Length: 161
Image (cartoon, rainbow, N blue to C red; front, side):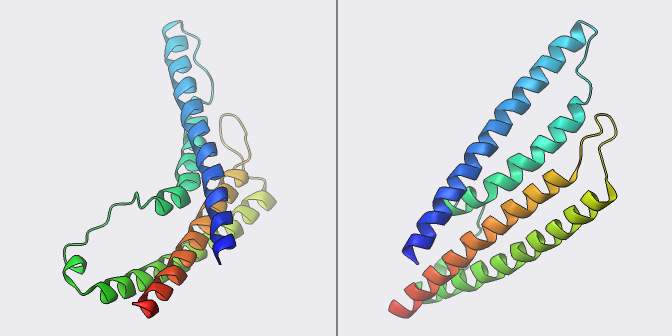
């Protein structure tokens, strides 16, 4: 279990590095496009590329953000409950999240396969769309695994307390 969790943490950190690189790429592309627009020579397809990079940024940073507990959580009611019940609620919430993001990953992979078979491309650059949808599936699948390990760890803590 510990080895599996360490592996997921390493993969999540790698995905987060890719996400950071996408943010930097988006920033450079946008700045270059603005400057070139002033010179009446904009970069074609900037809007499409920024949208595709946005999918990479969001989906590849989900797992790392979850590991760092970086998501917004409202715990006004839960923090007043006994510690054991808090951990039990955390277990159930992690399990529900794992199932939800597992389903999202599965459906995104199916949708990407359909897009690949149909040959769907973007309008301006004629870039294939399916790799980005597969990226969303990967990020969602990784988040599902993170949440599943958190669920198991919380369940163990519930039993021990």
